[in-house]
Structure formats: structure tokens, C-alpha cells
Amino acid sequence: MIIKNEWLVVGLITSCHGINGQLKVKSLSDFEERFLEPGIRWLQKENEHPSEIELTSGFKQPGKETFIIKLQGINTRNHAEQLKEFKILVKTNNLPKLKKDEFHLLELINLQVKTLENDELKIIGKVINLENEKNNLLVIKLLKNQKKVLIPFVKEIVPLVDIKNNFLIINPPKGLLEL
Picture 1 (cartoon, rainbow, N blue to C red):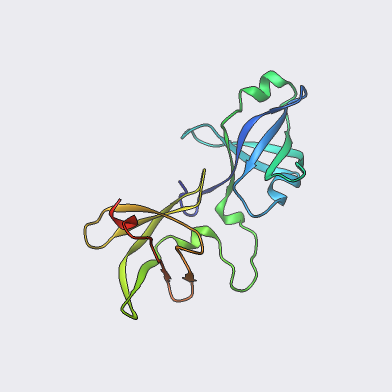
Picture 2: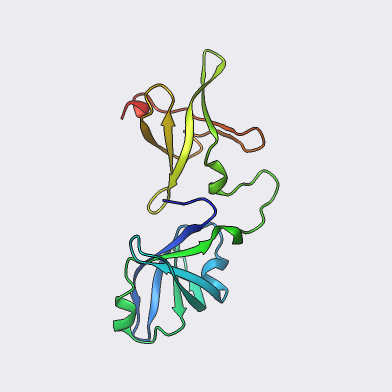
């Protein structure tokens, strides 16, 4: 879950790598530099308060979406094992600049959700949060019953995002909004 204007989960520590404290990280970010460039990051265990740590080096595993990173002060396999399943966070005020027509997932929060019915756009709800630790899912609160539903954020289901006009259009498969 992402809390706007605070923290963004960019990776999950899946295991240790080798005997010198290196960590294997599953990326949840489109920005590889978060695991390659040295600098301050934050670690979080479950829902505890994040703690600051320095990333000293990293590289991408060839052909995979995983990275091997080294954190300052983590020098043994035993110490690295203790960090398994920790989240790697960055502050949301430190988001990279994007090109025209690109957006950060955080910008989806509070957008109106519309569907196209009989060639007319109908407002059905609003994006209230994101779940992105395993997949990118939009948490949408429906207007008709205040129920929360999870919508996969994929082009086939969310064909249009209009940040400027504060809405997105979904094309949900039959039954998805009733789950």
C-alpha cells in the first residue's frame, strides 16, 4: 500500500546473495537507478517505521527483473538473512522527472474512474489507493455501494489515463466489479 506524500515501495528483498551481505531484490520500480546508484534508501519490516540505510552498490542480474545490492553495514550472510522480506522505500518527494504523457502511479490516487457504456462515459468510482507489492492494482471505491474493488492496472483493463482532466477509463471484464 502506498501512502501519498510519504513513502513509495520500490523493491522487496527476497534473499541473500553470497556470503558478504549482498541482497537479492525484486524491483517494483521502472527506474533501475534506484538499485544501481549509491545513496540513501529506507528499509521497512512489515508495517514498522522505515529506517534509513545507504545503498553502496548494485547491479542487475542479466535477463531478470532482480538486482543484487550491497547496503552499508550489512557484511555477513547472517545479517543479510535478517533482512529477507523487508521492503525498500524511497520518499515520494524524491520521484524522478517524467517525459510528456508519463505519470507516477501515485498520481492515480483520487482520479475519477469511468466506464464507457453505450458510447457515454459514466463515473463509477474513484481510485483511493494502490497495491503494488506483488502486482500493480488500483483500489477503487465504487459510488453505488461504497465497496472497494481491486482492478489490475494493465492496458487491456485501463486503456486511458488522463491525469490533466483527473480521470481514468476502465474496461473491466464481466464480473470483475462484482468480486
